[in-house]
Structures are given as structure tokens and as C-alpha cells.
Image 1 (spheres, rainbow, N blue to C red):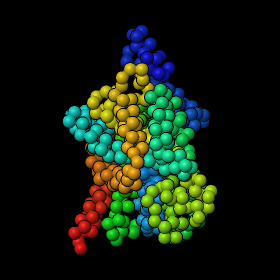
Image 2 (cartoon, one colour):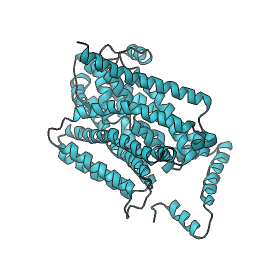
Image 3 (tube, rainbow, N blue to C red):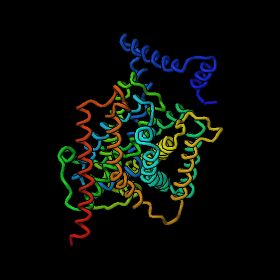
Image 4 (cartoon, rainbow, N blue to C red):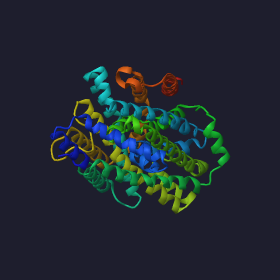
Length: 450
């Protein structure tokens, strides 16, 4: 039997002969009541809290250990010069997350499920393969972040990574959808510590303001790699797949889309602010002191003599919270995609006492990632940075497919993207392709130009 009372009640209604549309009618009635409460000046927060989650979790999970490492390296190696890529990526994040949530609300299906429906099983398997290739390195990066954060207090990775994997798996597999969501939202609150870190670093605010708004193009391949990594970690393909499938799992409807948009915008803006705070903290301290870092753990240690022990503790606590959040969300996103690709149910409310592709994929990915991170002398830092570049390279395929699905009348019906939304989407896709193309060109020029 499903774990939630709502599903149990639904099953009883259907057994008594209630028509399938009764559930949809009930959901419409709920949102109509929310609408009447809103019009009378009551229930605004209730309506918003009812859809809160997809935008916050998908956005804040982008500030994972791989993202923190990327932003830290961006600030430490390039100072304030390349800060503009973070606000620019945040704008794209809002745009495509809104598109994904609307598509999920209109169709009731996840990203890979729609690909399978529109272009066939082969395309669905190809999408699963691409996301699995890009996501597995990111999942390893999340557990590497847990190990790095616990390593600051002397806990070895062969203890911290397996313990985290077991705890996260128990919460996801045994908990109901809403219980899992509450745990993840509580963990996500720890990321606010990075905003405090950015303030403690005492940056040059005029330089921050200028370089955040005015693009300065890199002059070497390392700069383009940093830009591609920042774009890939902010607008991650797994995040786009997650927010659509999660919105479907949460039963976001077109009637509640108004509040879901607010959730997406808030989550995306917070993601950008936190990423900018990390880069600014490292630019104001590590770059100014000429300190080069390899990962977020190095950044936390290097901050102590420059910004004080309190800044180090905040950085380390934020790293652990970010790692725990993303170590749950990225495997969930991948499990959604795998289950949708093979045509099986994909939900956090499935019956865990019987075999489910969704849970099997989640546990399998977690075990493999923990095993990789627990290996001694594994070069995790190149893996973390490389996964973000891979995300940027895979990203164009994902956003093009998302744009085509959202623009398709046969898929989205009357909720298809409007003319201006489609035009803005293609402009953004061209910019993403230009960024990836510039990365490839700079790499070729740097390798064969001498």
C-alpha cells in the first residue's frame, strides 16, 4: 500500500467505483478554495507553502560541493574578474526552471518520460545514458564534499561517506514524499552560512558590483574552463530534470503555477546569491593573498589565517549541509530519469516493501558513489571540476530538448510556450552554445597554438 494517507484514500475511492477524474476534481477544488481564501485576504502563505519545494531544492542543490569548489576556484584564481558569469547563469536558471515546472504541470510527466513519449524509447534510453554519464561524477563529488567537510574535524572518508550514504538512503526509501521534502528543506537552510562568509571577507564592493554586471572575457583556456564549469554547475542538466519530475511528484498543477513560479524565482536567486558570496569570499581573501586552492576543503582551511576561524567554521558547516542536500537530490534526480526512461513509476511515495526501479536506481547510484569516494588516493578534485565541464557540454542537448517539448502543441497543449518565451529560449540556447564553443576553441588554440 502507498505510504501516504492521500494515496490510501484515493485507492479506497477508486475501489468503491469513484471515477478516475474524481481525484483531479478534488485537486481543483483544493486550489479553488485557496483562490477564495486569497481573494478574501487569507491563506496567501498557505497557498505558497503548498507548492514550496521544487524551486528551492533544485536551485540550492546547484550550490553543492562541486559548485562550491567551482565558485571557490573562480574567485581564488581570477579574483572579481569573472564574477559576471554567476548572475548571468542565474538568469538562465530562472528561465529554464520556469519552463521545466510549467511543462511538468501541463503534462504530469517528467523530462525523460516526455522524451520517451515524443521521440520513442530509443531517445528515452539515450537521454538516460547522457544524464547518467553526467550525473554519476556529480554524485561522487557530493560524497567527496561530505568527506572533505568531515575531514576538517578528523573523520576519514571511509567512515563519513558510507555513514552518510546509509542515513540518506534510509530517509529517501523509508520516508514519504513530504517527510523527505521537509528534511531536505531543513538541510538547505545551512547554505545561508555562505552569505555570512561573503560579508566577513570584507570585499571591495565597488569591484564586486562592477564585475558582476560587466562581462570581462577570459584571455586564456583556464578562464574559459572556469566559465564553462560555473555555467555547468549553476544550470546543471540534472537540476532541470529534477525540478520537472519533482514538480510532477509534488502534483503541481496549472492552477498552482502562479505560486510555483515564486518558488522557482526565490530558489534561483538564492542560488546565485550564495554562489556569488562564495566566489567573493575567496576573491577578497585567497586571490588577494595569492593562495591557490584545489577544492572547497582547501578553501575552508585557507580562510582561517585570512578571515578568521569563524569564517572557516561557517565555510565547513555550509559545505557539509550542501553535500548532504545534493547527495540526496542528485541521485533522486537520476533515479527519476532512469525509472521514466524504462517506463516505470517514479515517485518518492512508492511502496518500498516491493521492488521499484526508482529505489533500486537510487540505492545503486549511492553505493557506487560511496565506493568510489572511499577508495584511497583517488584524484577526486579533477573529477569534481571535470564533472562541471561535462555538465556544460551536455547542457545544450538538454535545453534544446526542453525548449522543443515546451513549444510542442502535441505535448503541452494550450500551455505551450508563447512566441516571446520561445524566442527568449532560443537566444539563451545560442548563448550557451557560444560559451561551450568558446571553451572548445580556447582548448584547441591552447593545445595546438604553440
